[in-house]
Length: 181
Image (cartoon, rainbow, N blue to C red; front, side, top):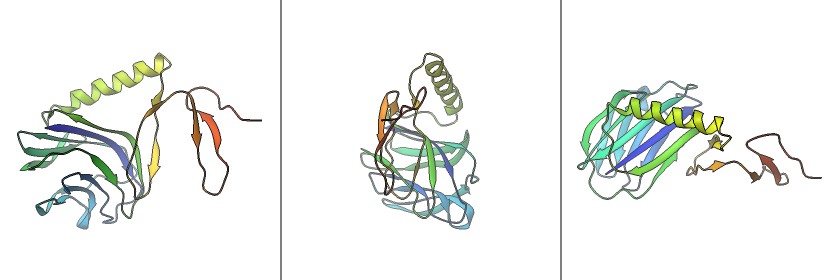
């Protein structure tokens, strides 16, 4: 059993098949054909479930498997009713496909949440984030991803960042930017 939480924003709504892929090969399509949220792959048939989340707005997807049944909600509303998901899930990745996706949070944890009660879990997570900001701890790094796996970490010290075709520069996520001389 597991719980996956993804806070995301899609640039477009155009049947781009942007999805969350699980290690079983199953996909939860966030921008599927016909403007629908769908499931497919990994032994699942292609099924349309709900309207796709609106583009250019932040959403929170909570996916939970409990007792072999997977369900999902977007912004506290059930989007994927319980369906069987056999096999062990050892990883998950964001697959923007033909879209651009901004990610604020991406966490896969053991243990299944109860879908429908995730709103209170999300409120608690937001309160922890506000507390960390007041305490001067690192904030989650928000990154844009184009077609590859997502990695997220907290950063509060100097970070090396590569730019396309340019030199590596150092920047600080918390506090003023330090420039090398």
